[in-house]
Length: 210
Length: 193
Image (cartoon, rainbow over all chains, first blue to last red; front, side, top):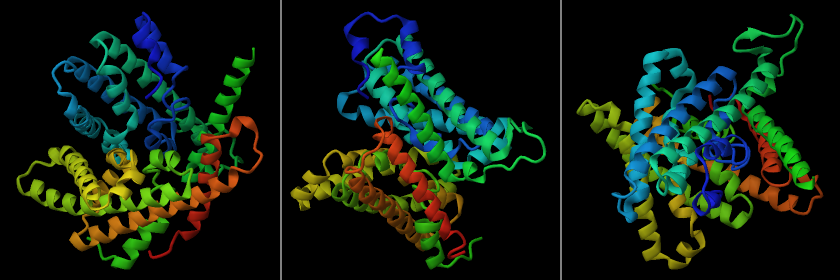
């Protein structure tokens, strides 16, 4: 929740708000927020993408509403009302996914409902949308949402390629490929995320040295 | 629907499908407060307590929502119940033991956004557990959460003295340990089935 100092002090353009979510303040790789869905549903690329898009949608809608209501919500009950707003949109998303694809709904399971307690969404509502205009909040939500989806996809793709030998259910390797079962297991999620964090850390430290 | 014995439900929630290491629920506090053994145990106990109460409430709410035929209110009412339970627990502890209240500090309100608690409420509804089974399930999940938290905290306290590459310090290292622990817990598969 601490990375928003720039937005209030100096003039920041909308594109900046968008870009920062993609890389500099990437919710997963840099802020390490919203870990539960990241690890739980990233066993295949398609699940990861669906989860990322669902979260991005909830993030966008709740950011808009929180930003619109920012002058009306009393300070004492703000967190409770944010959670209610988020829960409403999550319920909408839950039913929408069920209508679009029952299969996908089954494989994501209870994790769609669990978007409610994704700390990323609440932290954006509290740290950004409640203090900024609607248009800025939209760009912030879009950036964070895309960044989150991108990170989920990075994990999901690696885990599916190594664990299943396929990407989006298309086989990538010849017959004899021994798939790494550990990658689709829970442990694989921890390892893959840890390795991505190592890579990102390496890039960051190199940047600061230059 | 379920013929599982209570003991099996407990073992299942605690070890075989450990909430943290197999379902990835409650990762945020898991990474956040697992630095010290003492806070880890206290956090575990608080979570377990809230889990138990909210699981009982969730059972009642589910029965009520089914009765008035409004399943779409499930998520919203669950989250409200959890938030108010946390508030109640907070007030109760503040009144009964101010010293414990102080040592738990910010962690108490943060329990609201612990996905493990909402997870317990949702899973027990999906599995159509009865009242007693729900309680046992919540207890097992809470015990499993505390166990994982304490194990990681112990390991991390030791690792403070280890010489690791600079880039792997912090979250990445914790995730590696969690991965190895998760592999260990897979050894429990088949237990209590």
